[in-house]
Length: 495
Image 1 (cartoon, rainbow, N blue to C red):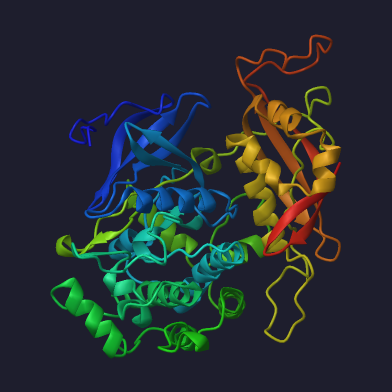
Image 2 (image 1 turned 60 degrees about the vertical axis):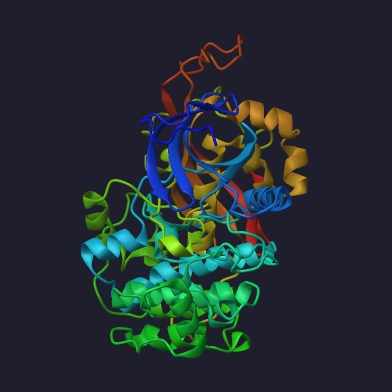
């Protein structure tokens, strides 16, 4: 490998487009760099997919295919994979950059979460897993170091970077895919990773969140740790409270008794919604339902984030070197919203030719926490709100990826992918705020705020003298209608 990872600025220009700035994390399998996409003018996280010793070129190509498959995932609780490129004969991942701590760092800094807070966080991670599993993607390395916290939202990192499930878990050179203390018993025993093993690792991650320690302690070397997991029960929970039964089910030694990610999410949401305890501060304009998803762990997180400066993203473990350190990734555009300004009809793109907005919720009896016996709304306000916020954040970063959030009918109305991408690429920032959701119809209304690029002038419309100059934000009220598509949401109409 010709890359000089000792140089502070890194390897320089990768694939003719991504210029490295500094290392944000190092581990046994390589370095993660903060880089700038010189074509789109945004920060990204860049990581080389180094081959394992003894691994063939075919294995590396398979890893690249998996990374491309992971790039198709579109969920607010998943660190996005933007691209897979080749540079000097090696594959590189281009990912969302998340400027925040990992769950591992935050717990070490601030101590364990309360059960209700851990359930709140866990329900969002389970939602990400449900979406990934529906798309046929297995994570294979869920652990606290791969949970990144950015913009008050937990995100799962490293989708697609572990080796294929059919590969041997331990090779002749002593390598293992995943982290021993977070491997399900069946994987530690040599079986392939699966959706069920992802659920076990989620349970082990929640165990760490409430206990402040791993369910299985290291036995001195990775092989001994794997043997210990394969043959013994985890250490008993002491701080699990109402969350303990869910963690115990997720970590059941029989994969068939763990359920699925959707069931885990529902159970965790019920625990998080249990009355009692104080409500944390939430961002201006955020609905009560959206706040409910974050209320228990947000104050803890904000304090932890103030003390931490980097996030971790961890790939495979080299057994002889121990568990690697994590590096974080996330999208800078989601951490700040453009300021509001008066609407300008001439500049404001309409949903018929541009991306549609998504909804948020206002406090109402339909969006307030309910008991486990209540009937769930058809369009849960918190979910729709997160989708709308995520869609417009993605629209600001990568309009081409946001295009997939539209139904075929909406894509036809929008006039085609090329026009859609060209239109929204004119903006430096786009944000959906003050969202309200009708939980019966799926209609969401919100304030859409966007800022033209400074080099866009009048936005390319020479006949319109009222268009704001580049760099000036404008806002107006929008409405979209969402529909469920499998495990995710899509925009079906907009005005």
